[in-house]
Length: 95
Image 1: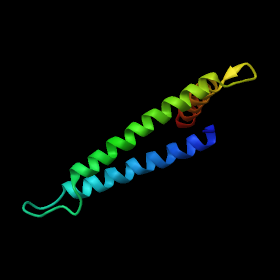
Image 2 (image 1 turned 180 degrees about the vertical axis):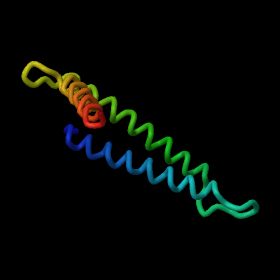
Image 3 (image 1 turned 60 degrees about the horizontal axis):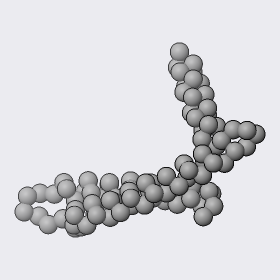
Image 4 (image 1 turned 30 degrees about the horizontal axis):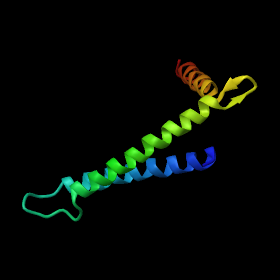
């Protein structure tokens, strides 16, 4: 699997988890005695499956980033630098 494909799947899995969260919120807020439209247990099971897939995918993406070098620097190092620069920019903008 190419990195671009993995990143696309990651976005899909993250969106799926968010949608499952919203569905879970709606089924747990029912009146006593009413039956939920969906089974909370089934939704939790689906969430755990998506989370396990996401965990495996994130591991593989991070491993790829760690072993991919450009101009003598790994993608992991570049991402870390970008994150720190973003933090610094946000702090300086808010001062």
